[in-house]
Picture 1 (cartoon, rainbow, N blue to C red):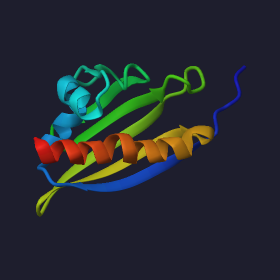
Picture 2: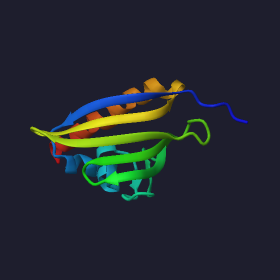
Picture 3: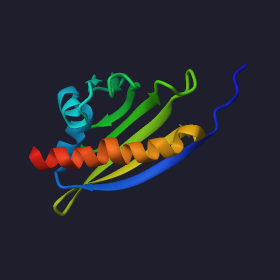
Picture 4: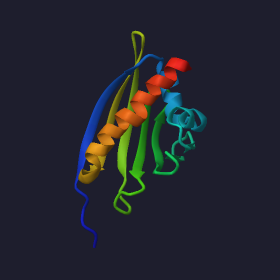
Length: 135
């Protein structure tokens, strides 16, 4: 019998200088995801579709998809406890000058929390903003 994984939830709100369709596309299109991260990504953009990012370090499955509005995925890092998946939710809304993303990541193992918290900022939000400036 395995020991239950103690977890924590992360919430972040980010504003992007682009319409929700563009931000959504960065997360759900393999080529664009690879372009902004600089690491290989494979994404099946449909409910039940599998994905991997950062050269296979991250993997999971899309649970809900409402084009340009909402993405919900099961999500895990390669070095997480065996079989443990978290849930990420991206909610997009149009705002003046771009879009707002309300992001929730539930079920992050406690030992991984600080790294994941900073990782979303450094390896996703910052890189997405830089990519969108050039796009």
